[in-house]
Length: 112
Image (cartoon, rainbow, N blue to C red; front, side, top):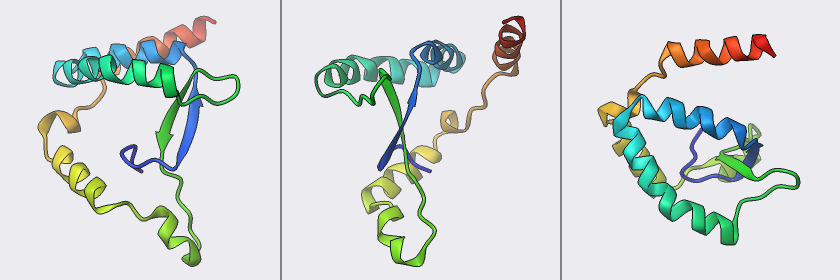
């Protein structure tokens, strides 16, 4: 699984982004980085946007192919592996989402 070198895009609704922002706000080290990246990312996506019919946003992820003849399709590039290894060594990369926000989401779903 890697969003650095995606080969498939899974759509998600605009309302779900507010949950992502709440979770990132709990980890200030991640939030400032994502917040500044959005200044670059949003205009690019408005011009060239990753849009799937009926969806405004799409989350990139790698689809895994299990057959032996498809090994080239799921091989991650060297530069992606280097970036992934570097970021996985940073302490904020391993942060866990606060249980309080996840419980809040569950309560909201039960009320609906």
